[in-house]
Amino acid sequence: MASVDELIDAIDNGDERTAQELIEQQPALAIGESLREGILRSATPLHWASHRNMTNLCERLIQSGADTNARRAQWWRTPLAWAADAGCTEAVELLLKDGADVNGDAFGMTTALHAAAQGGSTSGKEDSEAYRRTALLLITHGADINRRATGDRDQTALDDAIRKGNEAVIEVLVEHGGKTTAELRLANQ
Image (cartoon, rainbow, N blue to C red; front, side, top):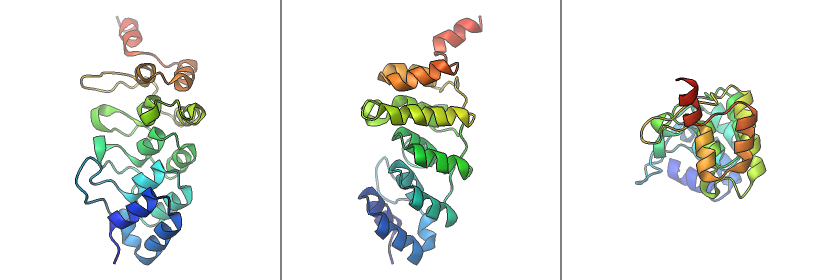
């Protein structure tokens, strides 16, 4: 019998065919989580498939019982936030259609919009258009554009985009009324 981590390895390696076969053989793998040590412990196959923009696999996982709002692994981010972090617009759209909470909390009350604003490991510079489309999609589905993260950062998505230099997302946020934390504080005085 295959393990959830074997399914995740197939997804991580881009082997969607093997991943589909594993789910067909063992549908319960769709609701499992990684047992590996480290920051990705407890991540689900849906987190990984969303981050890789494997929409057919995402759909299959959801049909097999995967939770679109699972808060697991690093920073308790949802599959939607993982997809937004990678600029995977198609996966974001699918997850929203299948009930993902556009304003679902992660660590420090960040959301998928914060993840898109941060632009992943490339600060959105690798594929700025994908991050722009992702942010726009989240906004049109009701993302709280001025939601402030808690803790040390106390930042809005616009603060995050500015800090990361994610110009495409800065533009979308400003066009739709996004404010920095400083602007919100001034407005509330």
